[in-house]
Image (cartoon, rainbow over all chains, first blue to last red; front, top):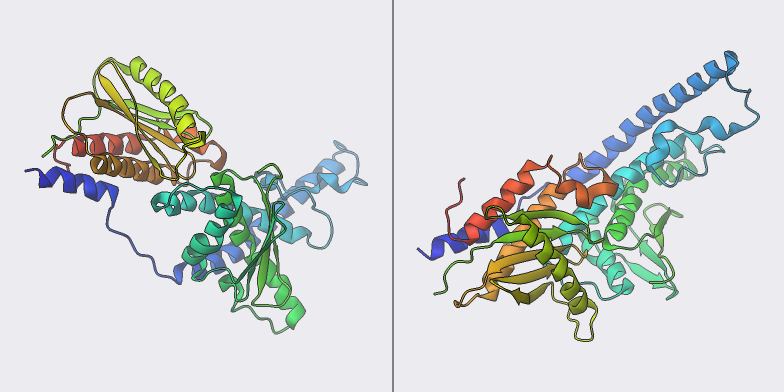
Length: 223
Length: 152
């Protein structure tokens, strides 16, 4: 009689693991970026149209100030600060992807932390990101980690999974430009994970040559 | 053979020390367990930041008061779970308490990864009246811990 309740509790504490196909995340990211690009193009066109209508109706002064061009849906992200320049249309997609990534990262880290002891310091947290988070999201560990011991960490991955298969018939420069969108979601995942652990840092992805990607993480000073 | 645990109450407390959910399993005494959860926070703070800090998530017996014993658990993300057990003479085995805590943590994880919860109000949003599943799950764990059968 004693064995039954313990095992009932046991299955609640450690339910059988559910598996997901490893390629599912790749497919999802590919489709998500495309779908969001279209969706955000529509949203920004709508915002521009409303603005034009307002100008024509004389409700607002005509724009020498282009500050109003902000996409209304961007407000969920903190990166919507700079919106001018040629990367204008990409910015909306990027901030959306990052917001989604933050949600994923925040919740996922809750699961990953279940079987580990408490974090001792910020380096411990970064190591956790490099090892556990990286392995479960992108199948490998970070290749190189550098830090200045003052809160800046540079994580380098020599073959970052989401961008390993990107190429373009228009040449290397164009492929690099495209790849930038595909690292926005991973950057969000890292940022979301860090913020749930308790560090409100910034994460800046950077791609120099194609399968290689570096993430610069800046944590607040006092930690 | 130790008798099964019979939890009186469970409290989930967010990393910012907001109450997420305080669930009592007996009638009428809810205020008392709010008090228990509050008092536990000080002890948890002491255990995690004090000179004798360890890296273990399970904090063990926090304190005993009148007829209840409070046990604590803190996740690496600083979410705290307090379990109030009746104070009896029988042995309480740590392994069982830890297993209960792990089940409770998993229940919280499942509730909080609901995509319809907004990111910024996650901790307190989970316990609100809207999330019935979380409550049911907690009740189920309590039943399982006290030796009842789990309806499947």
